[in-house]
Image (cartoon, rainbow over all chains, first blue to last red; front, top):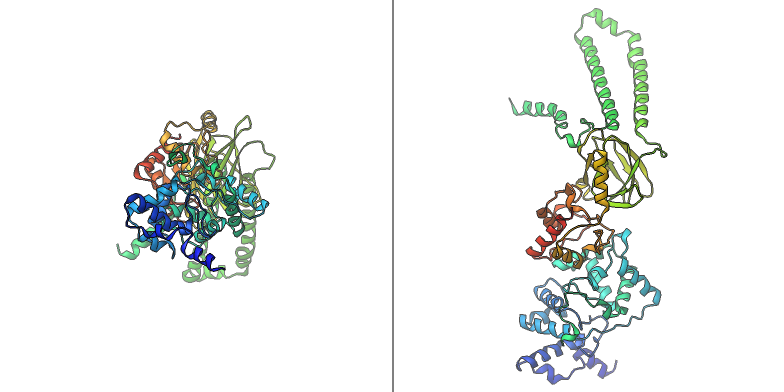
Length: 220
Length: 325
């Protein structure tokens, strides 16, 4: 790894002075906050630094705000996220959530082979009835409430890791997580990798909600 | 009365108390199958009681009787007669009686009768009817049958071995994965009885019951017609919550977009006598409790707990489900 690459991983690719201007009035404060997030998660125009880090662009504000609250309250454990979330007040969390919710969804590109993506597509659309696995898209697709996360374009590595955390019982502390936990337990390693690959490849515009649009791209 | 004698009296009365819950008692048969079992039970009970009384009498004579009597029962003839010939004859007769009575209960696979498929699942019952014109009608956790005609229950299992037992109508029969077993039931009078799983099938086994409702044939046909039709509910708010919260991934409500096949069909859930395989009474309050706290009510059941709803949302959702008559 070159010195430049190391710097990008550690500090992000955004300019230092934006990140340092945290005391400026509101609009700039939001920009500064987002600049902090963007060091790992990317922003409206850039992708996350690593596939271990989730994409936030285009995710519903309700969901993002809840994720920050859950980190801050310790319902979700993360060495990286908890200190960040605790340091933010309610308004900051809402601002960050709204920024990413207004950002255009980004298309992911899974390196997974086509047959794996196809297996994942079948699970996501139809579930596996005999094994008690419901169709992912009933909640995480166009039909689901905004408080359920949209997964299209999300990093497969991140998704697979989260499903494994759920399966191991680490994400059942919240009301939302408790819904996912018993479902994750029914998934095999292979099924996890398959659905994760499918969602990374899925076109985010397929998630366009028919109703209850909360923050749409047009609202920018 | 001392504590010990009270316990003794209670122990003696206990078998009679079983008859009190007539909804689910072998002592209250409501059909010929159960009557044959009941007759067999009483024949064995009274027969065993008579033999026991005879034995006590012989023992009393052996201990306290006049010497002439004691000499008489000490003969080898009595040992051979009462100790070998009588048990062989009695047990063979009982075996024959048992075989005859029970084979009359077992339906031939070619028997012409209405058929209802019942599939045991952890921990509920999937029930599939067929209309006269061949349509498949799925329901759950409740069985409706017409009075006076034989109904063959085709039993199988989706996961582990269960056993279907409706004590007022028939004996138990195992539900085995990959195999269909057949049980004939005939309800001789209208009424409600209760059945349950009689083979330990995992965590929530004890809460896997159901009601059986026997009605006259015309009423049954009318009911099946209503059951075959899609849902009729006017509550848009509740329906939207149901569709948006992923409920439809597991549950079907025919006539709406909910087409899940993992959990019980809820098309007419509001018309059933109970919820969650007879674990709860059926009303909006119980539905709300079930949606939020189902893991407390029936630990380990396959439905995730839904604690994400506000009180208002929960009320809307449960009144929608209760309205699915």
